[in-house]
View 1 (cartoon, one colour):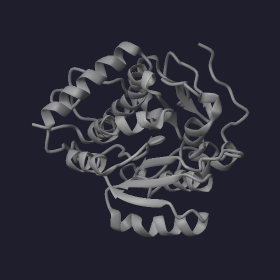
View 2: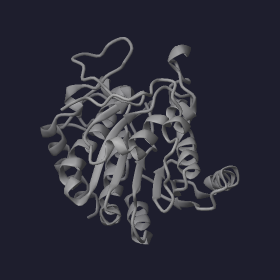
View 3: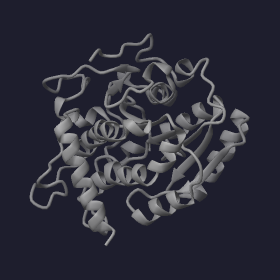
View 4: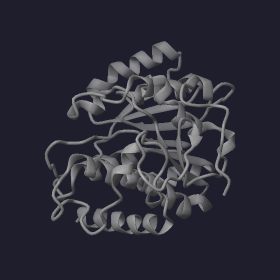
Length: 308
């Protein structure tokens, strides 16, 4: 399988990668679309003509963001809907109200390095629940809408943090393993990549593919539990640069029918055999098809139990 290489790189912006792309008539859902790089992701989609729904926990806080996006882009089709990824009822409620096709689903929302072990009402560790299980539930709930689009893409935001940990299949919720904020975060972001592998394997026949992206180091509210962004200045990105890889993966004709891959700096990442000092590349355990299938089965089982 040839690694995808592009003319873009670290400094490319969402505007760069969408030049000449027309998304008029296409519909996009972005979780966490009203904060951080989610705003710039939404702006980039709006600028190329897409209908954009910001799926957020707090619709009151998102309303002025949506209004600003409508004004600044001239695109009136910016909507807000409530989705709390750690609350399954909001996910099913959102999906039940959705009508018609969905062309792009962006798994953008997330939490990072919660200092203390937090659990959902189901007993799930919060980072695994929010970053992976909630998105897994949302994608499954919207499967028919994605299939209706005929050529849909799911973009799953991972992180170089996946290099800190594989999925702890025997104890994903830290019932036995001592909780560590970055171990939990790493596990959840490995899961985000494995989702893309499994979703493509299962749903490509329905016209649905998924890829994982590492957006880069961008100073946002995501780092509120870590004392702020600690990445060296030369490795930091602006939100517009941070949205570039997502927009490329979601819109480029080069990725027609391509899924199950991990991209960083708007190129497919190299598979690495250890975590290097620059935290680049993708770990083989995050792309392993057997791990992806196992995680899918575990996730489905957990959601079935949570629904009871």
